[in-house]
Image 1 (spheres, helix red, strand yellow):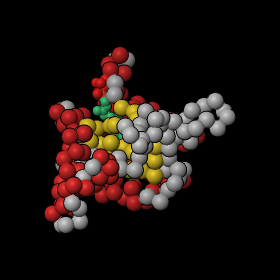
Image 2 (cartoon, helix red, strand yellow):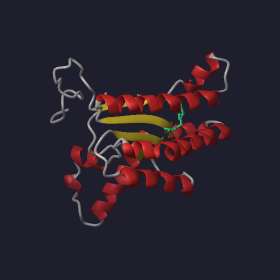
Image 3 (tube, helix red, strand yellow):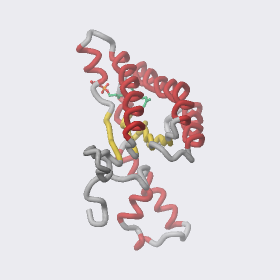
Length: 192
Ligand code: FPP
């Protein structure tokens, strides 16, 4: 797209390694991983969080700019309630147990996706993780949770409509950049 970087890789500083500015990962295959080993699906999710921890550490060590992990999508609400509450508890436990370590490592945490439908105590927890790491300048860890691309577009449209209604934005000024700035991913380079 015009005006956007042709590559999402950091320039080679002589090491021969091309480090991504923004790495996107879908946390998929947890259930299959567990099934292949004769384990319960939930054990696959526990293993997925361990892999996420390792990946965060690798990204910090290699200087990746942003790591976005797609964890729970809006479509995942069709899963059995027990599995959903297990996944939600894993997110709670991850924030509770890893936040101090993330702060020490200068990681900025952002949880993208709609807060609607989440329990107020979980919303408080993730808001708190974002607030406590907002000024960190190292790895951007973006967790897409309760995320859906159409919901993201709807939320951006609502925001732009409110700006127009308030007289702060003219409809003609809604271009690709205005939409990009209204998305959860505003300011982040394109992931690879
Ligand atoms: C996809 O695997 C995985 C999920 C729907 C849930 C992943 C979320 C977590 C493990 C918890 C989130 C916590 C943090 C810290 C981000 P799948 O069940 O679809 O696997 P399958 O495709 O093999 O069935």
